[in-house]
Image (cartoon, rainbow, N blue to C red; front, side, top):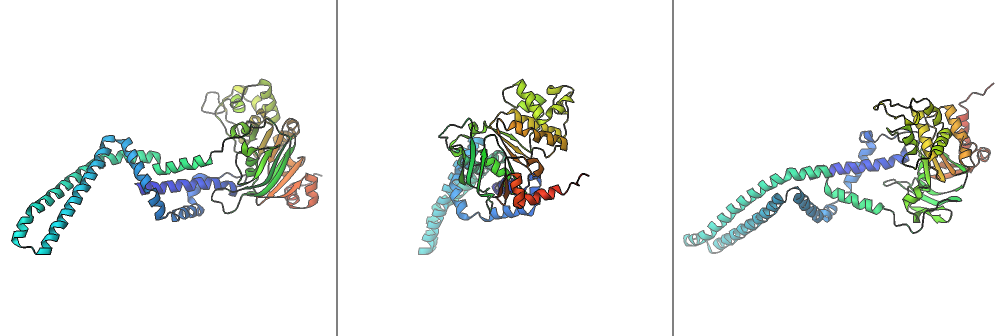
Length: 440
């Protein structure tokens, strides 16, 4: 049973690693399928590598803790059976040891002086005592086995529920090590400039860093774009700038405040995110947009108009009160593009100084995409906008464009400067532009 759950936990840990690894290998326009990860050879290579690293010293080091955890687990399952199992097994060991010791002494005395009839008769009381000790040991061992057989199903059930308790403890220790240190400075309420200097970041188990000595700068009120091919590190860099990930090297500062010294929750209050894989909540339209923030009617209307969600809401029978799930009475089912407008409105409603938009128009039609990006300049008057996108036509008017390649900043500048440079950005932009026939 224990070995089965060790293997199960090893597989779970591999799945967790695979989930983190998908950030590097899955493009911004793709969705990782974690449910089918076990069908890939890469998954099992990672699993085999993990099992191959387990040594006898690892098992021996953890054995005392495992014994203590097993006793506590059994005590939790059934105190009486646990006590009986321990006491009876100890008694069985005592009687077994005594019987073995006495047998060895009698046989040694007989063989040393010779087994004469007189010596054999003299040794009979000792032999009878050995037989009694052996019988008692057998009886006690049988009782211990009976108590243990009663205890095992309950322990197995708890073990199955906890997916092997020692690994649970290891996970807790790992989680403890990931807790951010206490903040030493207050989170900035605003900023004039965000700078990242020499940022390096690697996902657990990765052979190469996802980001390597990346330096970028974002000014207040600017529209800045991160572009590049799949797996270049765009989304990872955005999460680091937002304080969601902590780099292994380098610094990220909001003005002169390093976000490494700021508590995560207050910092995240200053950030709004429009994610490509946004949440579709079976709530009303109003609740989907407001989502836990203080309600403001004027702000709600403004966010809906800026995102283009107002046209979607206008077509719903109950407007903002419409439940977005067919399971409910009078509920509505939105298309992917309509959901993306609601998600964009949610990001606009959050009046944070930094707005991160990760492929915000992936599911929008051309008209809706144009309307959304046309509103960015208005939004950027009061906040900073960071866009991650593959659609380069959408970032032509950005104040600054960073082109990422293989975890590094390959190029940076305005659209005109990058086109004149004739590098990767110009190549990608030309490829996309060539898909459109010139209008006569």
